[in-house]
Amino acid sequence: MENLYTSNLAIDLGTIGYEQCLRIQKNLLSRRLEGTIPDTILFLEHTPVYTTGRRDEPSNYTGISVIKTERGGDVTYHGPGQLVIYPILKLWERDGKIDVRGFVVKLENIVIRSLGKFGFDASVGEEPGIWVSYGGEKKKVASMGLAIEKGISYHGISINTGKEVLEGFSRINPCGMDSSVMGYVNINRDDLIPVLVSEFSEVFGRFHMDSPECLLVK
Image (cartoon, rainbow, N blue to C red; front, side):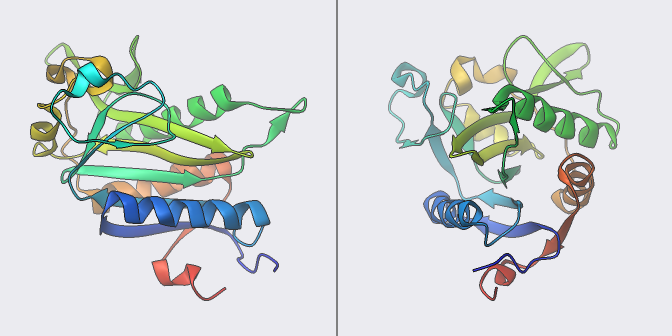
């Protein structure tokens, strides 16, 4: 089946459970590998959940039930007050090799530029993630944990957009750090998503917002 889409897709799934969304990601991953859909970005908010990745360290979530995943990183929290971004993108090869680090840097810069449009001086730090200054103190406002399968990315990025998300982090050591390092940017998700779509389009080619139903009819 050929790809009938005219540009890359950006889809807002609203609020969705983690395991249901993972099934959607894997379906899209298979279809991207087949070439029947273009590069696709999912925007969403998860119902409260703890997940951990390939650097899993159980001492960072004592007494907490977690979902183990294929992504990079350690334990983290997803829930209300957080915008999650899952890019299902084909990574182009350079000299016969996939430039994963270069891809990560592109994603980091997309988030940094997007937050900058709202007045936040965001940057990467010595520890993973995207950080902003709060009265001279650095706080982590975005996390990244990717998986790559046959040159296609999935899992992705979470941006803390509201104060309520901090309570979820307080029960764990997110990515092995004390939960006090976590912060938020207080941006409405409906304002942030179009800015992110524009930034993704600048780097990876044009994306347009569409409904989830668009993936069912092609």
